[in-house]
Image (cartoon, rainbow, N blue to C red; front, side, top):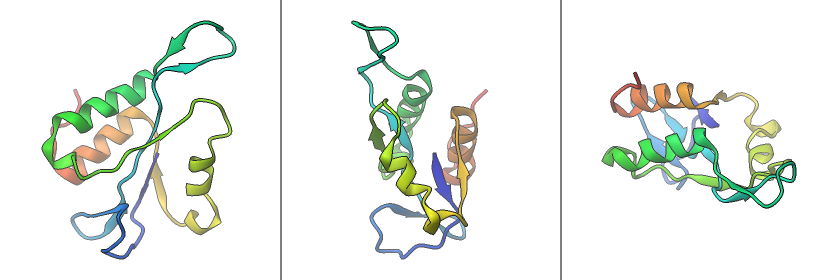
Length: 113
């Protein structure tokens, strides 16, 4: 999830300057190597989070983006906090395809195809 379009002070460490405004450039990605109580004894990674990790690693202009890795079990407190009442006016990008499209449009990287 990304919070987008919200004004933020330029000194904020979680903000990046884009075309006309500041965005909170901090996607929430699932930490790899998690357990799922429905499948005991196995470790997993999230394919969507791993795809975004790869995109962030390949493009130098995305190195400034801070990633917040959250644990698999719900509730995910960091995500809940980001969606708190103070953030309700911000639009959000969620999912690997919309997030990849947002990164392409905002940071000028190649689009997914």
